[in-house]
Length: 356
Image (cartoon, rainbow, N blue to C red; front, top):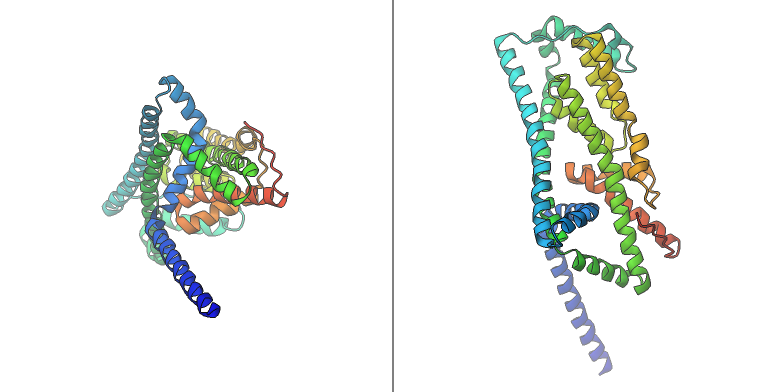
């Protein structure tokens, strides 16, 4: 009798667990397309919260009005440069296509100093020299490489377009979260309390908050500053396709690579078409931008955190491989957060949080 009762209970428990498991999988598949935008929206809300509090106080404590105004401003800040960069790429492509069809497209002669570039100098010099002398023959010679490069650029452009739409959705989500900050914070504490203890729940929640703000300001903030400064310099020097180069600078900066890796090629182009004095000034300007993280990161990064740069690098690259352009931002912060929480767990839950 007891055996039959045990079997019946086991079957009933298995059915319940199976149904719960199916429901969980179903729910996850439904929200899967929105996971990254929601996570990024949460990150933006946490990172921007101190500024949001100031805006809220200016508006007399009206939380919802502050959230609406923040959302409008954030969307304008995102959409305006996105449109400018897109127009730059489109205008440059149109001019190149029109001049090529008219037979008026000319490639400036290559500077002899290009030969001295390490590893790739000789190949670039030969290809550039051939293009400046006979562009049509050069395009026939390098047709497979040009076709592959074109496909890559189109794929990147499509990815950036999708990324911008995700960013717009994330900003709207962050505005909704900022309008309900107290409730979201309490839920976070409850989640960590269930995973750990009541005493450690708030400490883990505060650690997560400070990690997100630290990396968002110290890595993403510095990368945005470097990208904007690079764009301004290239606009002044009238560099073709400055929007695309700005995007490459942003990717390099987030991946913790020196922007000069990208700006070096831009400087080489400027030297080939501009006078020596402005070209040298532009090169020095690019070097200063590349070196600026030396004093900008200590200013923004840290605040009680000591996340290794390798963790940021792996998070940025892995996030981009997993989720495209928006993953470049989300991956760096999520892996840094995971690292900080893991290290706190290794230290037997001893968490020291220094408020900034």
